[in-house]
Amino acid sequence: MSWNERALKVLTAGEVTPLIDVPVRVPGVRLVLKDESAQPTGSLRHRHARALFRQAVRDGLIGEGTTVVEATGGNAAVAQAWHARRLGLPYIVVMPGKRGEQRARPVGELGGECRFVTPPPAIYDAARRIEGHFLDQFGRAAEHDLAEELFGQIKPDWVVTGAGTGATSATLGRWVRERGERCRVAVADPENSAYFPGWTLDAPDYATGMPSRIEGIGRPRMEPGFRPDLVDRVIPVPDAASTAAARHIREITGAPVGGSSGTALWAALELIERMRERGETGTVVSLIGDAADRHLTTYHDDGWAAERALDLAPYTARLSLLRPVGG
Ligand SMILES: Cc1ncc(COP(=O)(O)O)c(C=O)c1O
Image 1: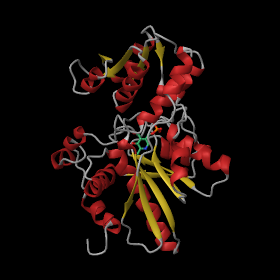
Image 2: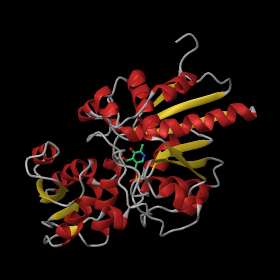
Image 3: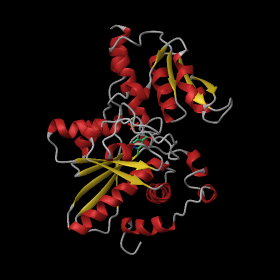
Image 4: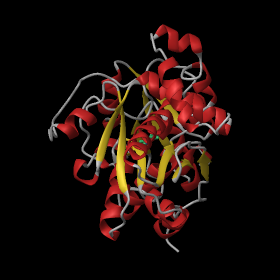
């Protein structure tokens, strides 16, 4: 068997992530979390990374001994370092910031190398200058295997996801359209992101130029991997709502989920409130994007929220719709 054939075998689908039911005080409405924090590297990026590697091996861009390169400050680096190690490939990630940051540690433990660059937008050019294959998760935004797995587990009426590269919403949207599923796809979009205004105005070049405070999702411009035509609704979510909803998930699962999981849950709540008003029934699936101890000092920390003037109280009150009766 050639190196490429072996690599493609290693890169076939992994473990199925679990579904977690959330109580809902609306008769006939079910809310389910798809828990991507159960991935071996703790986030949805595990699937992205696998898809990017697969595509690059099939296209002949990665072979035996190729150095794999990426530019990111987030979960993608850990997921990619994990796959690179399984394939025995060197891995270098360019991150925004200064040497010695905590984020480098899990990548180093997986045998990867972190290089730090400022200002943040310079990471992409720095990565392109490194000899090797630049995975380019935003430029290539490979569709992944979430939809196949999810729709094999459950038949929802709505699936709610955030959008970073746009790959997840595109994967889900294409799946339901190709197969004629009745499910609709909603994107939950945080403050400062270009996706809600860009989708609403049908403006593919829309840019806010502002970074999102919700790690992993919300972008300052419409990214090429985001496919507005494959999305049924984009729901804007205030950062305080994302934060309150992330805490709500932690109460249910015990895991310190990231803000993006809260963004998706809040948008799911908005959909459920509309369903209740119209007397509709059905099932909503919302993604847990990641969980990590570092989120304990941000989204789950009162001081962090206060410094940003995030008033969670009104959102926490509305989240009581997602509590057991008497809970
Ligand atoms: C809840 C949730 N949805 C979606 C995404 C991003 O997906 P994509 O980059 O495929 O748009 C993330 C990534 O962090 C996430 O946490």
